[in-house]
Amino acid sequence: MKKETSFSTKGNVVNLGSLSINRILPNSYTGKVGPFVFLDYVAPAIKDIVTKSGMGAHPHRGIATLTYIIQGEEEHFDSAGNYAKIHSGGIQWMKAGTGVVHDENLNYDAQTDSKIIQGFQFWINLPAKNKAEKPAHLAIQASEVPKKTLPDQSGTIKVIVGNYEELSSKIPNYSQQFLYHIQLEAGKQFSLSLTDKIEAAAFLSTQNAVLNDTEFKTGEFVEFSREAGEIEIKNTGLRTIDVLLFGGEEYTEPVIAEGPFVMNSKEEIISAYEDFYAGKYGEITTKAQ
Image (tube, rainbow, N blue to C red; front, side, top):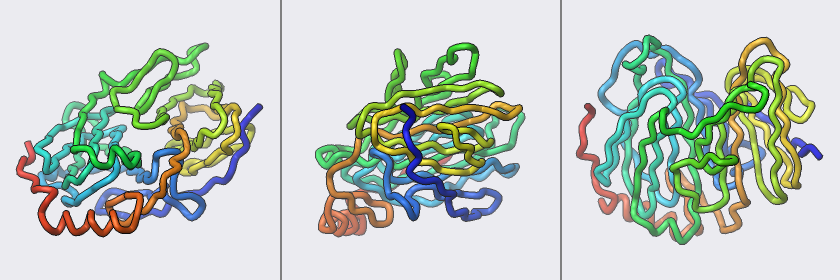
């Protein structure tokens, strides 16, 4: 049985210079999908000037950030001393844990001829016991992202987070979670079965797609019901489509989000701010390379 659609919506767009940032999650219908509590989409844009400064250093506590760069080059700096640069198709993952300051820098990918930038940033809410852990960081290049061809040469699936069949992401699982990038060829389809009480959503970044017999438009975020069932994706167009499919088990602990912090109580939010202003998160010392 196919899962029903709970709702669909489009995000709010904010322009930052040449970049258009589309805030997909949270939205007016929901604040989270499984452990995912935030999603910004950087729509394809040309950036032909290389910048050395970041987008603005800021703190986090209680979450893991995940940046998936479709096209471009992304630099990561944080106050725990981590530094990495990834290229098109790569992933930066940072567990903020007890608190960290980080910054990111987006430029075109010097390894390609394209000056287009496109990507996503997710926040993954950590269980309460993991919010008290030390910060950690992973940089995963495109060649390290698990990927396989779908049956009948229908397209490909990349496992950004979680597992799919024999594929497993390097990103730690603190709960049942998944984030897949599916590319589906023209005239093809793909189906995925999910168990009961698993929250799931899709985002259509490039083209329209038919999800469980309903056509949705480019830029739409679509959430599905929590009952067990199938998600079927059809490409009825003439070009390859991209679909991000993500979710996981329901986060049942209290969720209190304010600014860059996601905790389990108002008191913990206050403590997060106090510790940041007291300098307990440290400072970024690594320079752009």
